[in-house]
Image 1 (cartoon, one colour):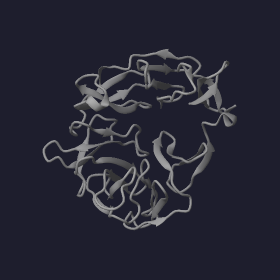
Image 2 (cartoon, one colour):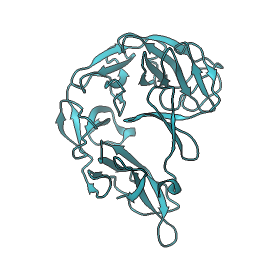
Image 3 (cartoon, one colour):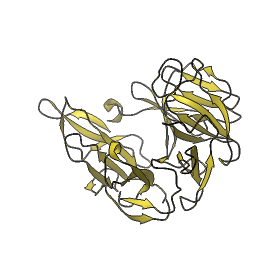
Image 4 (tube, helix red, strand yellow):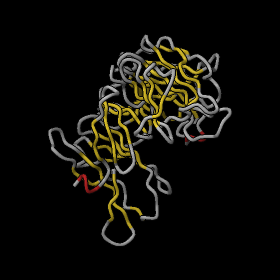
Length: 324
């Protein structure tokens, strides 16, 4: 999504960049988001739900929160109810896995006591609760997209011990396997993110550090699994000075023990499965999983995609002159 000055002084019109299947270039299409004064910020989220299908969520601000769905590549949009309705036994192709507040129902995040896993449907953009979801404490953290091997991942806490755990499904959310991570995870504030590579799975524990200079987006530890997530080894424990001490997004796993960490001030790479790291020349990046691979976001509308953690395809997105 991008903003463009609207006719008349002081307002911005939101637009959506779309690249149809087989097209040579991105095109700009009208967004259902309202025009806003240039002095106001925009809190909106775009969810891709498969070919030609997407959902825009308006964060609201001073306005009521609203949601729109398109099934024709942004040529038309229709408003949908963002409340969760009904249940679904599995996660269909193109869907997004997320959470909503189950208790009290509909509460804002700061007031939510218990969340549940929900599926955003690629058919109509509606949310439906996932039946058979694993028990991962009050605030499970799902990955929105599946990993390259088709697995879905959710992290949380063991309801009995309170320790950090991860759960994965290889049958589109119908059945789950839960495994416990070794210490020092499990301290308050742990948020585990997972990335599946060609020969290992990595789980990063993000949470406040003890000792050393305070940092944004702190990384507590990195774990590696060589059996698909059933058992784990803690390969990196963050200390008061050693780097990396931060993580932007998710780790980037590669073959042969390669893994990269995008930090706040620099990126770091390892060739021994995360036991030791050296600084990278290309600095810091925010990395997230997309249906096309891992997407690396840099300054100035610079992005890059990788499917194997080694080769990157660079592109520019979100800059108006690149999309027209």
